[in-house]
Image 1 (cartoon, rainbow, N blue to C red):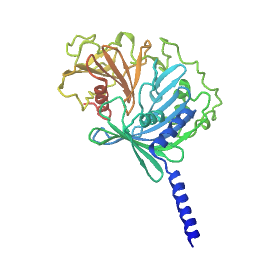
Image 2 (image 1 turned 180 degrees about the horizontal axis):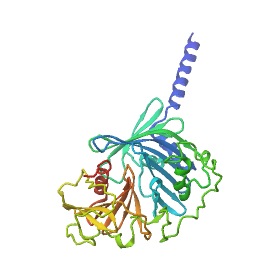
Image 3 (image 1 turned 90 degrees about the vertical axis):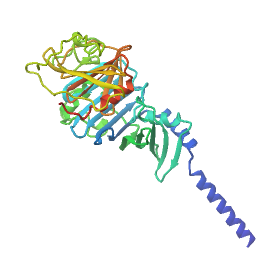
Image 4 (image 1 turned 45 degrees about the vertical axis):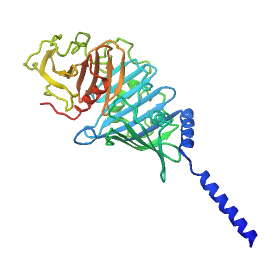
Length: 404
């Protein structure tokens, strides 16, 4: 009897040890995550990103491709307007593409090495492994980390990251502000490691033309990249060297504009004057340019504390309809809005800024300009003293505003 009791006790101890071995703590998971990133060659993910920055949540389809060492393709599609913008990194540089408007901007940048992106796997894992005060939870099918947010705005403070237990693929990310309100929510519908991409999957010309060839805005519909090329038209893959060299002219269809503004050199410095002085390169006019495409005046719903609108004016220049808004106070800045024609510009140093709903381009040093495009309208915020995180908040507040 005593022998049976001893054997039963041993079985119970072994069962407890086996159960303990099957449950990982935060340190073990972090160690595994470092190994996953170190051995990772490629991945492809897709999901829905929701921004809770306005009165009504805005949804965007997100598709992410990555291939070592530094190839990236991120497509953001406005679910409501069905307009896609793509940020692409390949051997030729970094591109921001808007296929539906046949516009492409190229510039030199080490993006995304110098910026965090809520939908990039490396960014999420770096946030987890780099936060020594991380909080950890073991749920039924997920490991959940609560860590500090490290993005380009001070409004985002914390983030919760859900990882699949089986392969550590991301399932969901919630980024919150200082009041614990969720500002950005990303839910991945799919995520696959070790994706085999076609040779030209990260080529600029291929991504610009794929939308029209495939009859969709993204040209992908979430299918694996290797299954999306070489269909039907019999065309050769796009030549990776087809992108124009620095400072080249835009082609007649306006496919490529090298630079960060999308306007010609003689108007590239619009808004570079002291916003409060009114001494700019254009003369304001209340007359709308003949034959222009008016969109009204789009005003941001956010302004930094102590800042007020000084004036807004229609600007006459090269036949384009454009608007200038000047703000003064704690910070002085100018906002330009225009529907630019396709023109050639020179390559200028700039960096990609993730605005959540689209990608912006930040250029300048003492005088900085944040440029982005939405629905064919180009926006530029120029200032000598406005912090970048404030620029981002202003831009975000303009995303769903209509002209007045």
